[in-house]
Amino acid sequence: RYVGLTEEIVGRWLKTRDRDSIILASKVAGPGHGWITPPLRGGLTGLDRHHIMRAVEASLRRLGTDYIDLYQTHWPDHDFPYEETLLALDELVRSGKVRILGCSNETSWGLTRSLWAADLQGTSRYETIQNNFSLNNRRFEDELAQACRQEQVSLIPYSPLAGGVLSGKYQGGARPEGARFTYYLSAGERQQKMASRFVNERSLASTERFQAIAAEAGMSLVTMAIAWSKQHDFVASTIVGATSAQQMPDILAAADISLDRETLAKIDAVSREIRYPMG
Image 1: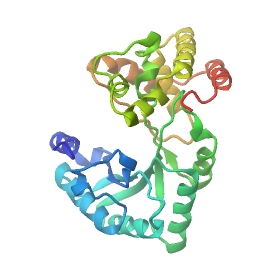
Image 2: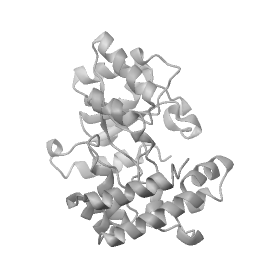
Image 3: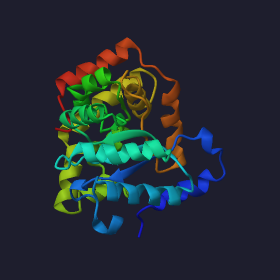
Image 4: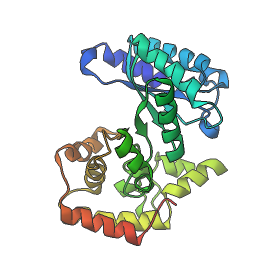
């Protein structure tokens, strides 16, 4: 019922703007690991040519445009040949329906394997990767950051606020009405497991420490967290979501902020002391 609704909304908005001044991104769903369910393409998701072509044509129709600037594979399929996926995606690039390719939720092995496959057969490469990256989840720096630097692939991090945890709204055991993890923590086992990664004793402890650092720097933690994310040399842009207009000033303030060395050092000290708050 709701699949594609966001693209329809964006498509209506897009008609009121200069299309060439907009960088438009969308995705084709891979296996989804249980998170992507019917009615999306009748419950049949995959990164083979048939599903990719169906997905992109549907997206173009909903968006009301004849090209997508950045087209990403959402969730890798390590059991399906990267060569076949990239041949299909390259066909879209050559046709002009897609300009740049990206992947999402990919591993170090998967990214390098895909780049090798693209180079071997002379097809377009993934130029971006969209993975989780925040003050509370710095695992990207362990391996993937080096691969991105060496291979000229840019990270577009999602959840720079750790699913809203870094806004401080879950501190002290709070469960705000309407918040995602408030719902997840009382939902099924899968949702509870995901929520416990984001909202746990260690993540709340690190958030409290980061709040103090942000206050010393004269900004909100929301602003500091986003500024920190975009300040990395392997980051091209940062995905931020807001549920109300009141949240926008702190988010937008990060665009013009560059954190100083002292603040960065304090952040790193917390990250060393509370290793991997999200596990």
